[in-house]
Image (cartoon, rainbow, N blue to C red; front, side, top):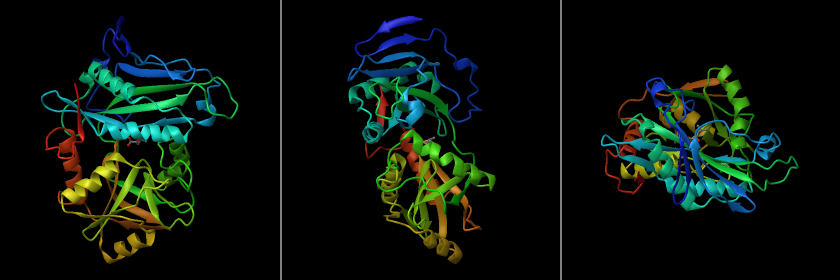
Length: 357
Ligand code: COI
């Protein structure tokens, strides 16, 4: 292994890349990782010298608090390559701000901005061959922080590890998705951590999602914990409803993730002169709209899934089908707009692209 020391980061490079063993046409989401990983430890009240090393297992004490209390937060980002080999991130400043917002809620120290961007840039430059060009291809980037103290008292850790790992990705969901609207279980509550990308938010969904899957639904649309009458978020995504020619999505709150894709779609809808209302939306409203034929689309929106059209939903034992989507569907129009900006194929009038140099 070659050891290079740069100004900011200690780098140990892998001698031979694993890339030749990868079948890029048959990737399962999040199972293949690039050659390197970035990490930085928080010890004695300070973030230490960041490091990049070959991707691989690491040693952590079994008593580390992350294993016992789930003190962990993460982000989801993507890098895209254009046909000239340029590499771009999409609104990375939003992810940086959000990981620190999540960290604060979980009593994790904030990570310095310069380390975040230097880490990302250096890692992506080392592993850029793993990014395939073309719409539909991307490199999924997973920054995360875990509590590493060897101590099982239920208290915030003194030590942490911030890491970035990367995984080449294609579609998250294959085809359309059927969802079950939650009537019993809840994802988040007022004053809780629903707005944060806290690891436990996702673990808590696995059991209800398994039950939904047994009934033939891939995801759950979460409703408000108090009354189960307001539609909030869909599993790994924010969710949009089209009634007539109006898009509707729930406002963010301490229960709902402030999704980067969500806020970009609200802007793109406006750019396309599509009326988009950000307001509470009731389950009854979409059921009535479905019955009267005005419910035209439901789609999830998130970094991993991009835009994921929903073909049917179940509520109180009844399944409601959505019309088939076509190239004029709002989900298709907005998805193409997003992908074109992300892949450097369209004008970036909001300054969302961030080139890795
Ligand atoms: C993302 O869209 O980046 C997410 O964080 C969803 C993830 C749980 C796959």
